[in-house]
Image 1: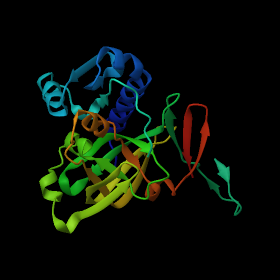
Image 2: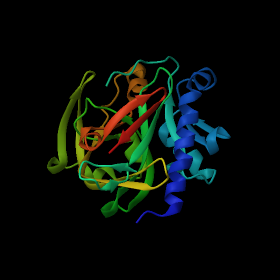
Image 3: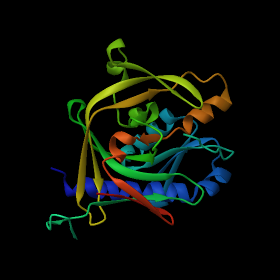
Length: 82
Length: 159
């Protein structure tokens, strides 16, 4: 059984993720080589130089890291081959 | 609804993934690992038909608050290799994913295990950055349960 609240959480996370990917070039200019967390569809963006530091920041701000889209923003764009 | 060759009406399940121009295709899902108490944490996956098994990175494991020391035993250990080299990984057993179909209904998929990819210690700053970019991968163990098609910046997983 999946709670509606969980599906809502997934929708929120998906919106944050899309915002992060769509704004990656802008983030690259403003926050190069930092970990960023996007909350509320880009209304709030947290950043730090390490993942642990970022998770601490989120915890102190009362944000659930599970609901934020978190990514490393490299200064230069990489072509990812998987 | 669609009508099968047997004449029965079956509902088409369609999960919507997305792609940003010039980037890979992604899909999001809730991740469950009941025996570790992980209940419905959202994860973004790169849809990777070149990967047999679904895999989470060590960074995501951290975000999910998975106690990696419990997995780091010889029993769960695996070796993984890719274009960038090889790394160690560990199996996390009995997991579930819940995707959301385009009507908002949950679509649950179970797996016997996923890989948790353990990052090697970076030798320099450049390598540290590159490791930070490795995404979570949705592998063929889930993808082959669906057919998929692309449409502009969208990808549909259907069955």
